[in-house]
Length: 229
Ligand code: CA
Image (cartoon, rainbow, N blue to C red; front, side, top):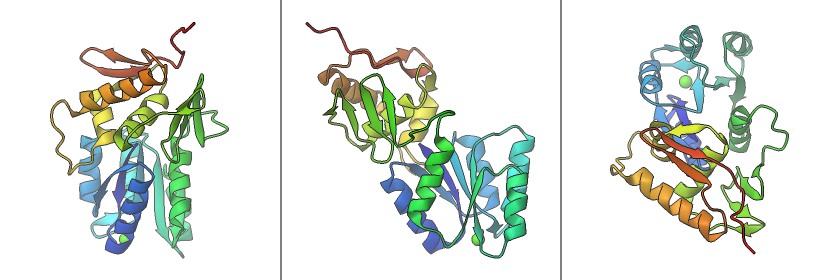
């Protein structure tokens, strides 16, 4: 999952990036409203973490602009204590949730995950597709209870696909999940990761789980095991 972090406080920003990375999120960190707007226009984000007091203006103005233009990316507002009115206004203006500084990093991660939850998910810690289970907090996956050998990118990729079962994930979206703005992946880096993930799934008995949609992207087609006798 890819996060846009908008925070001008260096130390806080650093610790947020570190915590998000540890939780398998890919993060782009910007420090101004101007850059936040530019990055959001260029990249598909799953969640935006938005500080309100920024050097070039008020984060709420950005939310208003986004909502007015139909951008529905979930926004988690990070706000200073004592800005109660701002917080309330933030939610009125289209923010999805807020955290009051200082906050626990674990709390921030769990709020982010809550915003990513599929509608109707009651047990968000583990995504289940048939006998495939993916732990969204660690990225660890099992099929029929047996762990799959996946590296970090393969875990991120599987999570992104399993969150949208049956729906096509575009190449651009998946590349955004795997690589932050500073990364410079090779042209076929995504294919390599998909290929490795497919191998790991096959090795555990899950065949044809990821389908290629030519020229568009990939879709998680299902977690039915290949018939074995
Ligand atoms: Ca600030």
